[in-house]
Amino acid sequence: MSQRKRSKGAAFSQGDDGDDDFSVSQTQTHSQVQRNLQRRSRDEVNRKVSELVQFLLVKDQKKIPIKRVDILKKVIREYKDVYSEIVNQAGRTLQQVFGLQLVEIDTKHHVYILTSNLPRVEGENLRRDNQTAKLGLLTIILSFIFMKGNSAKDSAVWEFLRRLRVQPGEKHEVFGDVKKLVTEEFVRQKYLEITPIPLTDPPEFSFQWGPRAAKETSKKDMLKFVAKIQQKEPSFWTSQYNEATANP
Image 1 (tube, rainbow, N blue to C red):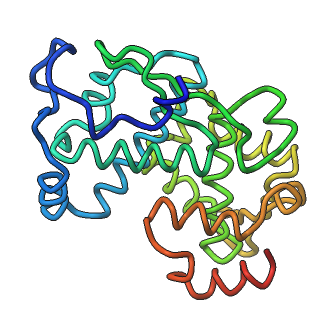
Image 2 (image 1 turned 30 degrees about the horizontal axis):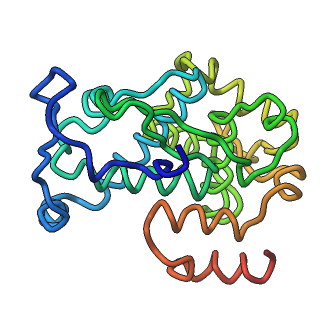
């Protein structure tokens, strides 16, 4: 198994899934994928990568084997011409940020699982229950707050989560009540602090890191997380880079 721990995204071939509309050409070369990428918006590709990471984390939370055809139908869809690049980027994010690897367990039918290592944020409350998806959600929120200057309005946080297909006003299949998880559980565990913004009508709130987050992770790690997602050097964000290196 150790020889197949890396994502097989670039090697996925046509057939076997029983759905030609969502098949991937086995003759698609690296140069063809790169040409296809040039016709795609980088922001849209990054959005697909984020959606795939979320999709895989949800599947892992339920310990459901992941089928290639489901990835294509539910996430990749019209972006199948750059499928291998999206899968490879998502695989790197899962491995480098969340300590997870995409492993092919059935090469004929293209079935995968995520194997777990220790996540970067080593919170005992989350790690003890092996709640990988919640840990991923927390990491995403903490990084967003840091990149916004260590404080983010509640409306900005909810809109950010919506772009990742996590709807705050709806019951999520893994997270349940997302607003309750974020505003009550993460706050109770001291990962987040939420304070009212004075003189706002209707009331608005500000999100900051809580004391547990400051102890269990770092701004440097959060900047590395964002840089890997965006495929940029951490120094691209001058203000955040200076802050993170001054207070690692």
